[in-house]
Length: 402
Image (cartoon, rainbow, N blue to C red; front, side, top):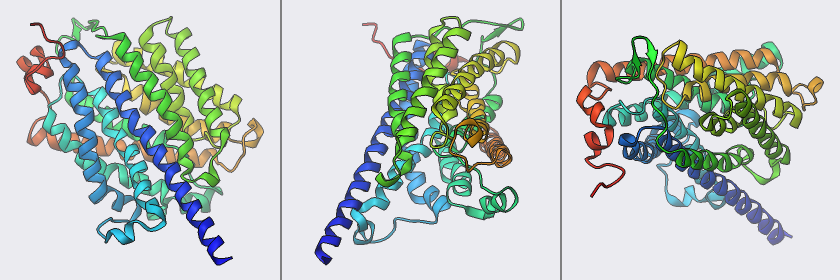
């Protein structure tokens, strides 16, 4: 009997390790989606830079999170013998890998907002500071109960802030960090002339669409595998993600008047918004969450570029920042039992938790990029920007003209 129990326990630990490893690989693949979404959106003279930023940022994020960030968030280090690290089939290591892919999404999000005029090395420095300190602080606050914030919400409002897969913890924080970076960088040269927007069309719609599709597919690992073990896996999360994705697509198609850029960002808006409550909402609530997110993105992206003259190249603040905020709030609405959800949420807790996430990201973004701007500079020179980041930084273009 003892051998049987040991075998069952080993099978359970091995299965959970494989489960979360597959999730980590799916979210790792999403970084290719971030890369190609940016490659397809920026002008051709900045495509190499987009690809190089995403891969370099991931590598730097891995080091920052392994040695510092994971410890800040969860109080765990990996400076122990391998015999200790491989307990339970190395589940603890694979959990780190999974959560690293979330952490590394933060600089990948920021990358799209600061495209075409940001220096390369200072952005890597920003990645270190953000992934080592800023993001893990809020991650630990929400997902590990650090500093008593969740306990305070539970004491005053019955339940804590619920964010199952990171509408606010990942996307909202990434989007509002990007807002600070974009504001400090300023507009691209030539983006506005006599106060009017100058069109800078996407360079490659097929690449943009490819990036969107890779992100959509990987997102099911992002959301479903947030259960972190087989026992807690739920088909509700998968179908809610699907419905929100479809809702965001349809809204962006209609409100965006068939524009392919809006169309391929619409499903991402829906998926951003549903992350928080995907484990609690009814599928119809998830659909409505996605519809509102898709329409919100189209409106906010247009207003950002045309009315407010904020030069956020990929619209990452509207997509991740604003739709992430909507996701935190939507969880507090559509997860309620009165809307067909499973309950266990407080709208007040959702509003407070979301607001704290925005505040942490705003302060962190302006602090990190403000420090770098004052010390080493964060923007390419005018001639470098005119020639493009590909030639100015990497000394090679995306396409050979030989």
